[in-house]
Image (tube, rainbow, N blue to C red; front, side, top):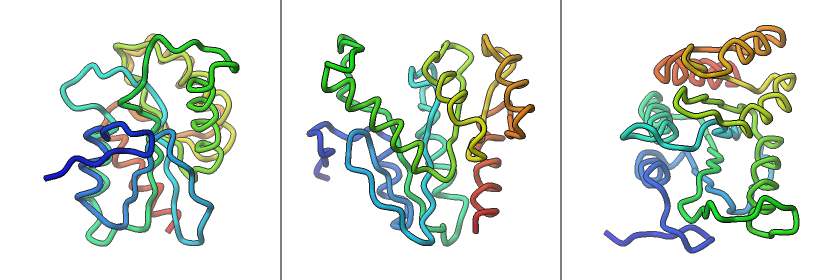
Length: 187
């Protein structure tokens, strides 16, 4: 089987490969690929949250797998995945450094476009950018959050979400169920 590459030339991560083979109605878009225009009947999901992988299966891969196997005929879904296999931790966090600025802009644009923003706060990470993104979008009505009690800011995340009516769950299995409920509510 030939290995495909993303528009940036990088090999796609396992989440993209699993998604590509599972359903033609679920379309993955990896950063920094161009974002599509909104289309009637199309649901956009952004996968926010911890990026550092602390388990054998990255949470994004597991969630995409669950979604692709939940529906017999899935609704048309586009999943924006900010994970980049070509990410370089030496990139300078500066608006003047083009690759880093492109990534941040892509993530913010994708979150604004998304109908659902899924957050996972891995208890083995701090994920400060994800906390900031949750604060930015918590009032949008788009967020679904998984925050296990072991996460270092669990109390703050829980109170913030309760204040704005955002569903918070404690496990990845519950997160998958919450996203399915949200998709079913959207129709």
